[in-house]
Image (tube, rainbow, N blue to C red; front, top):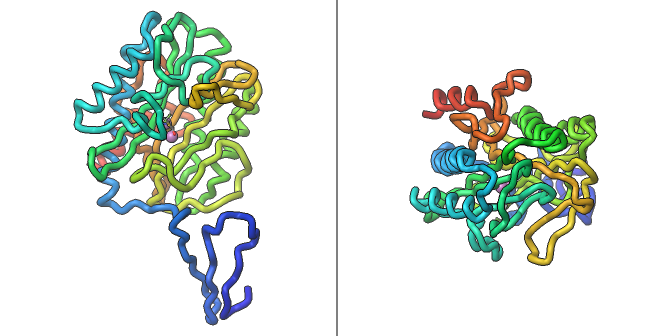
Length: 319
Ligand code: MF3
Ligand code: CO
Ligand code: CO
């Protein structure tokens, strides 16, 4: 690399996020472009972030108890809204870019961003409930997490897509560690999903989260190991693979929110907010207890990750 001068980014058409400066000594350091800088959380920030993420996790656990045939997606919205506001927090989706409700409820072929309404859940449906909390209400942090639930008795197809999505999230989390790359996450997820005959949605990705609901970096759930930026201790982002039983293409409805699979095949999703650490990962939205109406079992073969065992270990460390 030439010394004593500005070095242009390799691909000019890419976002200028990591302008490198080279000193005569040959050492390089990076100038942050504030528009795309990835924030690293300090221990102080993490205290509040953990609290918001645990509120979101507890809310989702409570939602699991109310999933049953006959409930409407509005019932879920009302419950989540009350749960969050009564604990001095704000439901991040409400009025976010015009979103009209407090939670996303995505049923069957709905990939994400389903708007709660009159839809009655029926036996055999699957429904993803995506909870995001903002705590404290002023100058707070967003905690973002979702689960796909079974309504009544699931079909074989439903089990395939839901359990594949659940495992994809765990396999993605297992890749997270200081020094690894963003591509390691998507690579691991795509390999597994496709081996199961499912596909990975490309139009929506995981995201940095914290002070803002959606911030850099983007975390694709597809791609190649060894590619893309390195993970650094202190980064906080979501992993939220959307897995389809058919093709990966999606279509947005006229309400400008509801995303369906193009071929109307079933879609499932799970989401956690995670912190990159020196020795791996802390799942900030890990749940203390398993959720009902979803096969929320410990993942002994992948590692503790987001299981209740991980929750206990985390408590011991972080209090
Ligand atoms: N919680 C979603 C996510 O995981 C975003 C929902 S945006 C909303 O990123 F406006 F639809 F709520
Ligand atoms: Co998210
Ligand atoms: Co979410």
